[in-house]
Length: 329
Image (tube, rainbow, N blue to C red; front, top):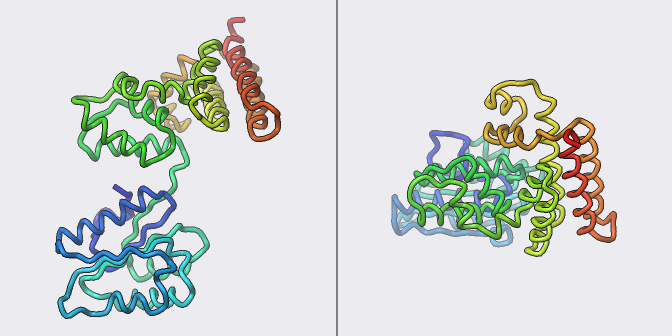
């Protein structure tokens, strides 16, 4: 379910604004309104419009009183792209909404069309936040929420493994959760994810990073070659390598304490604190610095600074794995 800004909101409010750029959440915001409307009236008429379809005067036609008082949902996508004259119509409608009609505006947020958003908020529109989930932690929280919404339990390690295996596409993550819930009984753990996503999980950029920061060069290189052969973008691998090394550096310089305390301090989930503690045993501060330089060089190499992105990644993996053993060697 898309996240709401008001816990007591009503999907059948006269106006709903769904703000953000996460397509899945925007679609869910629309689906929630439509479902509520059809629960109230199975014959609800739904009009789903793009900006070019909502011309000046069109909204007035769609919201004009009906002899049959039919319930209607009018959805306007990419509302930030509406013409100035149409925006005037929409703002006027905020002050004269029609009973039995729900207007849903999907807006990307940002500066473009901000006046429309401000007017909707001032008029008391219901608002649904649909932000783009760019951070791994956000996607992890999303997966946990999907399992909770379906009434099922999944271990933290399983949620992380699923994100590692699927990647950043929320639709694919949501679909994977639904499939697992339908197919698997009981608590879903990391072993279940491994069974269902063998190949994808092995090709994960995070598997490459984990093996590298653990000093397991041969396994890291094998995972790297498999990842590249299955289409994982090189830039995703350099990002995972950098995240893995930075986690080592953060934890090694943090004050001692319980995982929960360190998790709050470092912005990591407690289970990841335990994993990184295991990984950091062979590291030294100089090793972390060397590995971070290798990540930066590899990142430049895969973004056009070198002739062979694969070689740039292989070199970084070897340097990181060697740095992971610096305390021992």
